[in-house]
Image 1: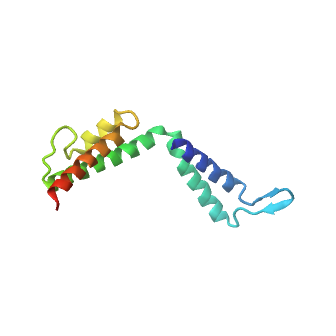
Image 2: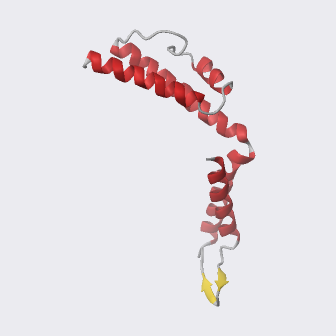
Length: 128
């Protein structure tokens, strides 16, 4: 994912820099007609590149999302009366967030998917 962001970001920045267009086999190819659009495209490119320059930015974003989803899943557990307990079932944002930061890629997604599966099984048996 990071390499895709980097490629798209660099593409946006390059397009912004040559925004006046270029010649290709004798044809003029206009890219952007407006300085404002050029600047916005350049900024957008820099935003796409920034997580790859600061890899922790993407990790913090991922773990913030992980913690929020974990809490929502815990709330659903309580709402459905599933009685799922253990270290994955709580509403402590910092606990979920810090746990995610300490894990390698893929583990947090596995945990979210596992909680979702348990909740889906519970919902089938509860039949709201």
